[in-house]
Length: 263
Image: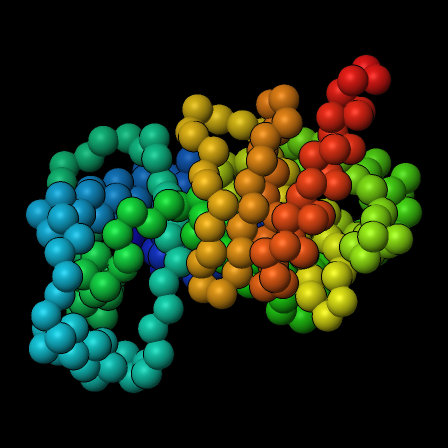
């Protein structure tokens, strides 16, 4: 019998759940062999399609046919992709039960994703953009509301796996408005939230892993500025102008360097 959580597992794999729900599904999947097998099959399907298709550009006619099939199957007229990376699952026979309970929509969606997704897409960038977009939804931006760094920074103890640099740069035009915890790269990240004019800037902090630090980039209209301090990675995300975003990044880097020198 298929696990009752299988639909949420599929939604998590497609990046359709919020951070807390994703963390809950991942904890469930660590205990459930059925969901481990489902994730393994989905991941192997993604890998196989990626290797076979090699991100070849789909002809316009094929793109239109895929999108029409999706519309006819599900009635959904808009399509948006987020990626969620599953790793470390127990190996199972390929394809076993991969599509039990998954209709033609999911199959077509998987094919469409690999044909239409941009090449060289980095999962961490997708995760950051997705987390930033979720934060802009009502009641998702801030868990602790304060302009006082002595309130925001201690809050992260017990709520996140890292302790980020926190400061109020209101005089420079970057007002500290609070913080929250988020979840990606299999860890609880800290997010310090600033307001610059009409723009929200999320500054994510998480523990460095073996992966290389991504380069500054723009994705879906949002700028992402990356830097590293000791064993922590930082990324400032916003739709504000590049110069304004990099201005905050520089202030935080200078503060981190000053704190490190005074340790």
